[in-house]
Length: 402
Image (cartoon, rainbow, N blue to C red; front, side, top):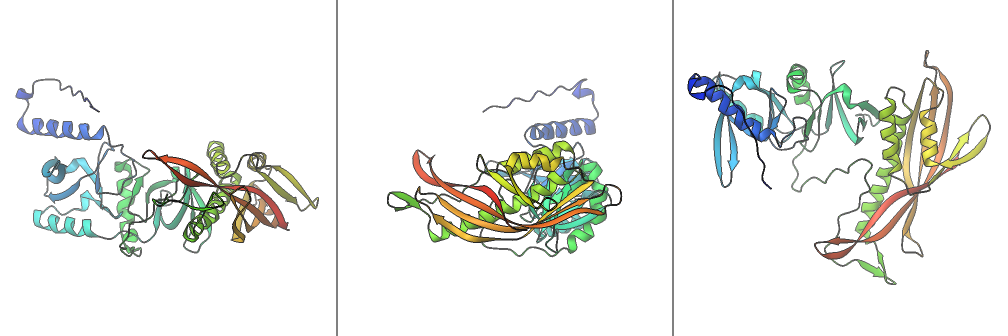
């Protein structure tokens, strides 16, 4: 694929002072790179951010009072390029730690030593959310994210925050996202750098980190290169595969619980809550129904999962809190006569309706829920070969105790 970049320079380059020609040339080089590198992209390798908001996957190796030098890989060789120091705002290393260029020493030897230490510095041992107002560093374990980030606090409590409230996210695996332009993010990031640096670093491991599951997307375990085990002509799970899907099933129930928090919370916009509804529906089989307990009427009603989620969004409380706890299997994944696997997971749901003004509790109940899990095999073509893979979805939700 060929890419064409048109650069128009008005005026005569020959008539420009030497310094201006140099700046123009550098800008052309960076604009060409920026065509393919969005400024707020998720990144894990070394990056630095230009004042225009664009991000560049290069490592800064030298600096003085006026210029920075960075290394660019060109085929089998490495090329060093020079840019004006004032045009670069922030650099990230491959582990998620960052450096404000304004704080980089101007003396070349001091700068070289600082850069060497910076690029070898370990990243945090947990995900980090940096909230804009009030400026706060939040250690977290991110569970799902779209317009909002659903996470566990250090004490293990579920929580949510809109991405629009954040300056940056630093992930445990070394990647990061800037939610603000680099110029806007610089001051706050500079202020909390000490706090971020003091968070316990991650311990290096020999094997690569597992891939993060995309919220709301149907996922399957890695396909084995060996033929699947068969029983009566039907594929069966190995013991290790059962453990993988067992963990995935528990995670999907946790994701559902996280989406419920967003859907019910009036602090999120209608659009954000609609996105959470759509993502939650992707976790379930078509036609899934849920039982709902009414404490006032002492009855159990049944409705489609889509109807339930849409009604949840419109409940007439000032706000609603929904929390799930004690999520665990009560029936392990077992193969059925049609070759699929089924299991059951239970969890305790605490529902609380709050007054809009006083935040007083208007209604509250605790219900034990029973979630059906379904695992089906299907054929998938990979490199011209048919392989067996599995699709895991949640099914009907019933009321066990109330």
